[in-house]
Structure formats: C-alpha cells, structure tokens
Image (cartoon, rainbow, N blue to C red; front, side, top):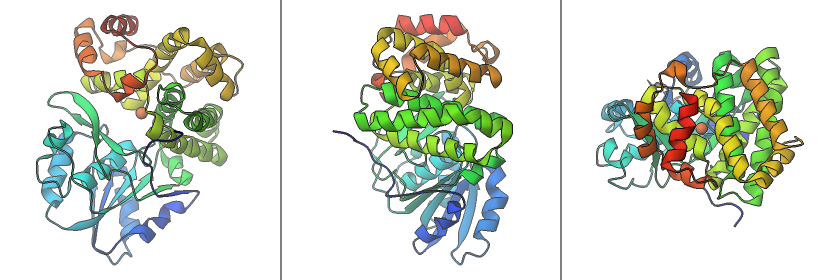
Length: 364
Ligand SMILES: [Fe+2]
C-alpha cells in the first residue's frame, strides 16, 4: 500500500486559480464560509454571480458553538454549494457545515462521535489563504468545544472537497505572524508525516519535498515578500496535506490539540513551540529514521536539520516554552487525558503519561 487516504478529485495550483471556483458550482444556492477579513473579497467575487449567495464568518480555532449557530441559521435554506475561503478555520468550517447541513441531530452528537455523519449531498470547494493546515486537501475538520476545552476532528464520509484551489497570490496579504505560524504548522505536518508509523515510500517522498520547500522559503517570503517563495510555501503546505491525508501525523499534533484548546494557544504557535522538544525525543528513539528525514530534506544530519529549525524559530521570535501562556503542572492531567488521538498513535515513539508530564515540565 502506497497511499491510503482521500484527497480532492480536483486540485488546482497557481496564481489566479482562485477564480476557478465558480466553474465547480452546481445549480442552487451558494454558502461561502470565511474569516471576517475575507468578506469584502468574497463580496467582490460573488457580485456578478447569478446564483443566490450568503457569506458567513467563523473565528480562529473554530468553536463548536459557531458551527451550531450557523447551522441553525442556514439548515433549512437549501444550500447546494459550500465554499470555504480562508485559513484552516474557514476551510474546516466549510467542511463541517457541508457534512452537517443535512444531518438530523445536533452538531455535538457527531463531534463527540455519538452518531455517524450522513453522506454529504452538497458541492464543497476550498480555497486556502494561508500556507499552513493543508485543510483544503484533508477529510476532517478540527473543531474546539469551548464548554469542555475538547479540540478534536470531525470526520465522516464525504468531508473531502470536490475541488481545492491553491492560489499562492492569496498568501501575500497575510500579516507576517500569520505566515510564520502557518508555516510552522505545515513544517510540523511534513516532518510528522515523514516519520509517522503509517508513512509509506510515497508519502515520505511527498512530505520531505514539502518540508524542504517550507524550510528553504519561509525567510524569503516573510522578509523579502518574494513571489516565488510564497509559491513554494503554498506548494509545501498543499503537499503536507496530501502526505498526511494518508500517513497521519504525530505527537506534536496529538499534544497541541488539548494544550492549545486549554490555554487558547493558536495551533501554529503551539506546534512551533512543541516541534523541537518532541522531534529530539523521537530522534533519540530512532536515529536512523531521523537521519533519513534530514538527508531527504537536504541536510547532512538530524542535528543540522534541528539547527536550521532553531535558527528560524529565533529569527521569528518563537517562544522556547509555554510560560507566557500560563502552563502549570495543574494542566498536565487534562493534556494527558485528552492527547490519545490518532495523531498520537502515529508517533513511532510511545509517550507514557509520565513521559508527557516530563516533557511539559521542561516547557512550563
Ligand atoms: Fe496542524
């Protein structure tokens, strides 16, 4: 088996390809899901469209309460097309709404896996504006229930988009801190995909290409606004999505979800801080694998790869620990209890509850 996952049937990559979204619409109403900054852009995009359109916005880290509120307002309106335009939350919001819009039960029933999602009936089109989550490719939506601090994926048949349109031009409008955070998320995904227990020769090749693109182009994109560097970041992020749609991720993502939801740390920042402490532990447990990873990414050794990541972290002021977010030993039980996700199971090194407490002891 070389690939075992679901990815969009149509993937377009290139400058201006965002405008192709109208070509994938089916007759009927169009629901557009975006972050609030994208509203004027979508108003312009839809101005000449003859189909009836409605634009709804979602917040970062995608609260379950927002999905429920949007569903209540649109569920009986007969939308046949859902378009996600934005960062991971907007695209995950579109995926969740597409899956839930015909579901008979409240969203929480599906979020907590007490019911199976029905088959999706509407068209789903995704357009990323950051190079980070790879959410335009993957078949799940990461949602946070602020009432319980549980952050996990909604999964089900038909959550894969019909079309993903990856247009690097859209990345250029993002603030520097968004580009950096997103890139560290994508880099983490690439490195975790390569080393995942479910990786294959094909997914490792895709993941290493993605990691190299991100490592080599983040500085040029952020510091020099080089169009070619934005192209490379967009390509790298898209490739991570393709790789981990099959391979799954690892302990950084397993730990980042409960930690991020508990202390309200943005996902990319959470991954960026956890990345090296986790990678170094994983590497000590399997030096050969991490040497292969480093060499596939163009570095002589795992230590050289880690040094490069460390240089980027310092350049972009990534904190070394979670002190400023208020992490204390009182938080460890929640993290330990809620980290045993599919991502954690893909990590080749097993982390016992004590290992996790010890790791966070160094980062608190
Ligand atoms: Fe991620």
